[in-house]
Length: 512
View 1: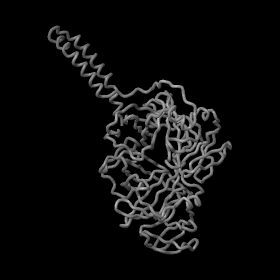
View 2: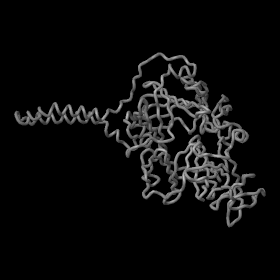
View 3: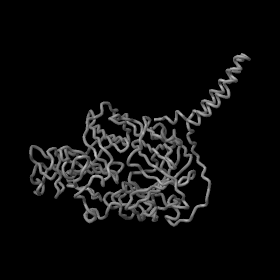
View 4: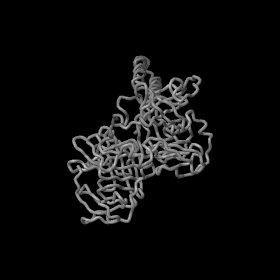
C-alpha cells in the first residue's frame, strides 16, 4: 500500500514529491502547497497555491483502512466551498489498484467507487429531490441535487484530474437505505459512483491524526467550543469547531462564516433580542441530556404553511403564503454524541429528533414501508440564531411528510435541492427537558393540533362497507316495488358524495 509510482522534486521549492498512483494528474507539494500538474513524466508548476482550511478531521494523507475485502489508503483530497458549506473528498487507492472516494461532510461519511452508469437516467434539469427515482439494481431516490460553481477549491496529495480555478459542478446524489449513488453530469452519459454510508469505526482506520495533532493544526478538536465576537454588533458568538457550516449571531441575526476559525461577516442584520428572548431554550444554555453534557448551539423558528402552499413556493409557482402555525427547533451538541434536536410545538408538545444517516426502506412512491401517513405540511424559516451544520437563511421553505413509527414518527423533509429523513419521539418537558436544563416546569395544557391527520384506509373501507350493507336492500325495494327512478337517482348521488368524503385524502396521500 505504501509503494511509490513516481518520485521527483517540487519545481517550486525543491522538496521531494512522491506520487503513489499512475492515475495522478494533479499533485500538491506537501511542503509549499504549490499545485503541480504531471505531464509527460514531469511536474509543472501551475502557479497556484492550494492551502487547505485547517479542520478537525481525523483523516489525513496516508490514512489506511479496510473496506469490504480490500485494504485502502488515502492519497489525495479536494476541499471545496459552496453555498451550503464546505466538504472534503478523499481520493482512495485500493490494494487491487482500483480507486474510490471517501466523502466527509460534518459527521457524515460516504465511500463510493466508480461504476457503470444506469441503463436509463433522467436529464439533470428534470431531477427533483424527493421525487425523481433511478433504478440501479435497487430503486434510488434523489436526495441532493446541486448545480454550483466552485471557486479556488483546495487540494492535497494527488488527484486523477486537473483542478481548474473555477469548477462548474452538476451532481445528483441518490439514496436507498444506506446505499449511495452519485451521478456526475459533467459528461454524457454521466459518471456514476456507487457505495454506502459508512461509520469511520467500521473501516479499521490506522495512521489517523490523534487529538494532539489535530489541536496543533486546527487549534481545537472537532466539536470543541470555539468563540469570537460578532464583527457586526460585537456580541459574543460560539460554535462547535469543525462541525459548523453556518453561524447566525443570536443578537443581531447577521450571517457569519467560521471556516477559518474566526467569525467573518457574510451579511449584516439589525434584528435584536426580541426573538432570542422568546426562545424556551436560549442559545448557549448548557445542561445534561440523558447523561450527556450538551449545549444549545442553534435555534430555528418555523412558520407552518399549508402543504400545497409550501410546494408552490418550492417549485417557484408562488411567492407568498399565509402561515397557519409555528414551531421551534433547538440544535444541541455533545462532544461525545454529536448533534441532537429538540422540537417545540404548540399543538403536540415536545419531541427529541435525530437525522437519519440511513434512509428508511421506501416503497415505489417514496414512502416508508409499513408506516401510515399522518399529515403533509410546510415550513418556512422566520428566525434562526446560532451555529448549524448546513447553511440556513430566513425564508428557506421545506415540505414535510410525517409517518407513524411506533410511539414516534418518521419525517421526510424536502426542499428544492435536498431530501432528508429524521425520526422523532415525544418527550415530556416537565419530566425531562426542564430538569436537564434546570428550567421551571410548564403549566400543563392539552395540546390541540391544527393538522388534520390522514384517515386510515381500513377505517374508510369499514364505513363504506357498512353504508352499502344498510342501503342495498333499500335500493332493491325502490327498483322492484316502487319503480321510483328519481329516488334511486337521488340515492345514487348521496352515495357518490359519501364515497368522495371518505376517500378524499387518497390522492393527496399518493402525491410524489
